[in-house]
Image (tube, rainbow, N blue to C red):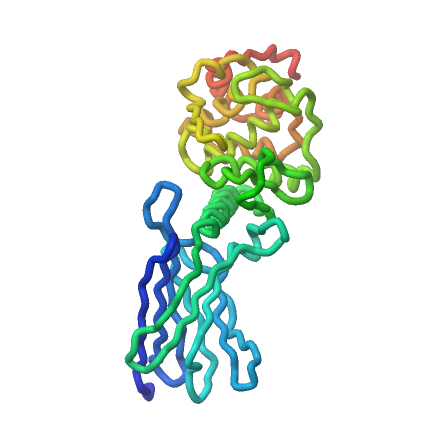
Length: 344
């Protein structure tokens, strides 16, 4: 039987700004002490949600004023985390618990000075007492964690098909330029981008395409591009693909722009205008994912089998890979009609 020692439990649940934190320190048995906690925040829709797969670090100052970390952990699906406390004579009186918008494999959110967004609390533990803690004003930091959740959702959604790409997104509340991705480098977001649940994922999708193709396919007439206007086959493909990924990850057919405007690619007739219109490409791919006989797995098999330069190339590769030709009805819905001999 294990020899149980004193039981120390202190808990805290507070909401200041937009982040809520719950912490408990518990000695269960002499060789098995753990620090437990939970991070939550107000989500884009105004509901409280967990902070998922963000890095937590717990540390304290020792008697020589040296910073001692007991390690890092990733928050779980419910925002909870736990860290083992090394065996020692006593627990420190004060802990610092840091939460970073960082995942070691998927990516990070940084400010203009390339510092990772983070928030922290200081917890003072006394046996049988409530832990005292404070959180700085976190309204802007919460938006950074929304973006971090976009990174996580994208990686987890595409992981069954490809190895996730580590992405760095730079965001600040002062950035007025349009959101964009610099090939092979960082994603730069507009100050209003966090309000959209699709804009950041669109840029992440560019980074993923760059990674698996070792470059973005060359595009024409794409300096200014629009969902419902003709650009070029190559531009419509590259931009349409990224917007489609945003819809797939969020599991709904409506794209939300930085300015808050929304468009549904299924019902908007403007997108039924051929393969030089970005919205047409988004719509076709979305409808394929909703077709029980087709689905995302087939799309990913095609786009990773060759460096796809435009949608006609995608369809040619689809046929070459012997995918179900029944998908042609989704092309026709958007007025995309190819001469099979011309594509062969």
